[in-house]
Image 1 (tube, rainbow, N blue to C red):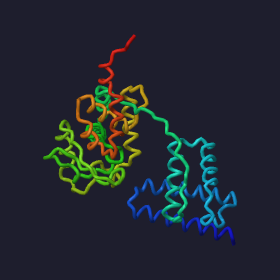
Image 2: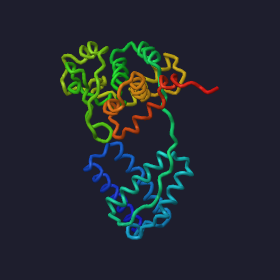
Image 3: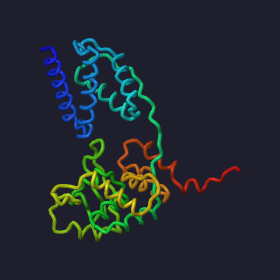
Image 4: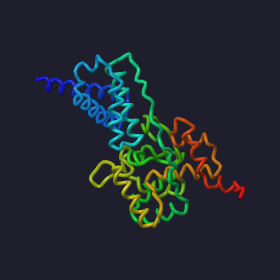
Amino acid sequence: MFMEYEKYLIDSYLSQTNLELAIRGYSVRTLKSYKICLKEYLGFLYENKALKNWDKNFDENLIRKFLLHKKEQNCSSNTLHVYLSAIKFFYKEIIKTSQRINIKFSKRPRKLPSIMTHHEIIVIMRTLQNLKHRLSICLAYGAGLRVSEVANLKIQDLNFEEKIISIRQSKGNRDRITILPEPILTDLYNFTAYRQKTDYVFASQRGGKLSTRTLQKIFQNAAQKANINKPVTFHSLRHSFATHLVENGINLRIIQELLGHQNIRTTQLYTHISSNTLKTVQSPL
């Protein structure tokens, strides 16, 4: 009977958390991540016989113990960040505890993104015979789009006259505009002509939109055919877009707006990896 009650309690709190996140406009991805994290955390409390009255007897040491347990399972720093964020949200917004969780975030390892040259991207595009596939890659690079933004793009978001793209409800639930690459205007216009404005630009043959996984596979297959011998992903197209704009002397604030970065420091990363910047520096050797 007690086990049934605890199961009910866990399910109830998970539902409350999911509802609160949805009301506040968090992404579906965040909803799923937080639910998984909290389910594991509450299960951990149950295994440690700490679930009874746990909401009244707040124990920060148990949170530390749980995070250490996840670290011992080889969870990355980024994953530990998600667990801790989910737990903090839960106690603050659902349990309404007045106690503060004084656990410092672990340092995230800083990794420079993999950047492709303009020539490498052109070679990748030339391997794609399917027009839909080629245009999806062209837009990702030419407009600096995330894979989810390419998948969610609708025909009504394309303004051929102004040569701009409206990105709606992207990361952080923010809207922005970016450039519509002129070299593909004609092909993209013909590709979307005579279709409903509410249709997805890159529709699946089964209906609806192409999945992000499909788009990633399209890129990976093309990169393999093009013999790109570096660890690149679909997101490398966006990184390359930003880096090449920096190399072309575009103002960093403009690049920030095009990418939809909330903090300019995120955009400043590309000033450190610009190969043109490095070419201007002479070694003291």
